Length: 334
Image (tube, rainbow, N blue to C red):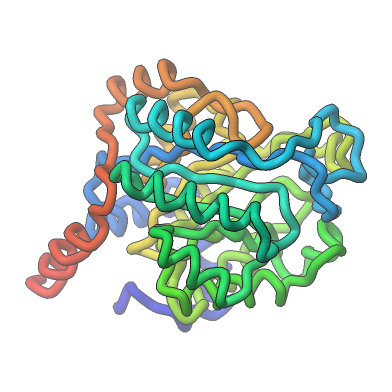
């Protein structure tokens, strides 16, 4: 059976998703081993370069200006502050540096020019550079590519059907258009979602189906568990169960074999044993550092201990093309 497919049906995705958990993990682990170096984890650092004051109404987000979450609005950080944070992240073992700004969309102004300079300088350090800045035009995506941007994050968050229950200030189509602009500019796509937003299994299946049937699979697929924040509409949502995360990661791995699947928000509440199950199911990237934008995350020391216990090693930057060539050769020889 051909594994790299972009023609999955929702029925097929549902069948995979509802596979008994241990069987699902085993199948995902086999596919993961075939397409990736099994114990290699991409370590990323995410920095909020412009915090709070966002005009959108994403129901999970503490940075939305309309919610009272205690997150103070700050202007865009200075370039040297960002570069100092990137150097620190690199020294701690991160190979991808991600910069997030609480904007609805990128505007062609001096702030965008500063971001372009940040991208150039971080790229010059030998790190992969990722940004998440909201909606982009194709011209803005091209400028980011020229500055040295490796990847752009723009999550679908949930299914198209559930989307309007979570966000009303932009449409699902806006999300897909930004992903198209990123892809057309030759930038790697980073797009996944959040579970725990009050969605159903059918919503989770639909979101994975959308990602897995894009013209090209996202190179990176973050799977987030909601971290409920007081003051947001979703503050009372129950915490996501570990096995729900494992099921999502395993299904994503099977549907998108070559993609990096990132164990993202919600990791702070997971034991090493729970994280190990996620890695076994096909996760091969994490965010390092004490914060993911404004939410808590395990610290570097704890992650280093976990890597030592599980025998994990950090993935080197700009290695994808080499790994892909080796993988394709292995697959063709079978």
